[in-house]
Length: 514
Image (cartoon, rainbow, N blue to C red; front, side, top):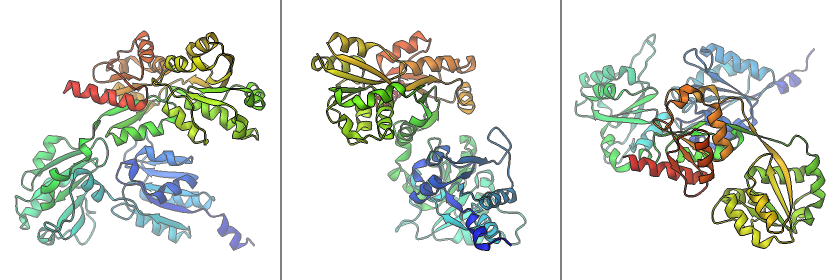
């Protein structure tokens, strides 16, 4: 007979995690911890896909309609999927938009797990009401205007025996927040007016709250339905009713971000795009990942492994990318050695991002050029390398400026390939379709190889929008030259050769067109 204790230990655990209303920065620390330990993530359509970067698990999306993202799963199917995965020993995260227990059916999933004897934990999330209010500048409670707030469904189950009491809602001494009420906005407003709510009561409708696609419409209870229709707002949305709406203009902040509402393509390698994507979000933009190249290990580590025991022979070690830092120093650690092997060397990096990568290994860059490009690095390094042993940890391909200049300056240069920079065969289908529909405002090009790869991967339908709806920004004159040679029209060029410089170039170009 099976041991009950052993059977119990084989059962996995389910975490019902609130993902917040859309901004990936609003996930709780506990939510991120759960994602990091998950074997399976089952996420709904309101979840920002950027949150999946916290997990290496298999991720499956539940959909409201059949389409490219997947097949519609009914609630009973979702419950069964959670139970089956847990019974197979998996740690499962059910990632839900907003908070699982506020109009999220999380309690139904918890009940199903409880009935099946599956251990679970519920991780609260920032609910859409608070997220939408704060990101539009509305304080749901205020000592002068609202001493209470009520969360109300705008999409009732028609089979319920008890419906909303609009007489009570009309008399409620505070702020009303209706979830899922956009398509019934006219009926909701009319019901409140008929129940005695003044027609002049201020109302705000917030669509796609806390995301760069956030849209806000304000008006009175009498006119809000027609205003929302005219603005062509989309779900998900919330309706906020009450005097607190009057204070919105004093406290608005999110919609004033410099790249608010812009959709920006980031053609960096997938494993390196996170930081850039999050910076785009901070600036108010919607990032779209367009990995045009892939970073992979060298075909063989033989040459690298032969150099590692000799690192103490080098006077300078030069890094021209973050990948070079990781490629050399990670392999050093994996070989059983540590930073004592490079104690004799001085370090040169092409820019601050590469220097920051060094700092993660507790190493400081001795030289960072004033301009973040190979020409400047060579110019400032050359006076210091005559007769010196110099190691360049590099990619499998790249420009010849650095080796040419250093060798001419008298350096004993060793070039060591520590990673490969490989072209991908195609862009992600969903991202390419966004370009083909003209939905991107900008694409940033951060190297000549990325510019050439993007030109190769774009379809004729996508190229139609380039230079018109979709503008291209380059990180440096060298990248601009490569992009133009590949037939790409360039609208802006960074003054500082970093991704921050690229974003600032986009901001400046947008201001010029206003």
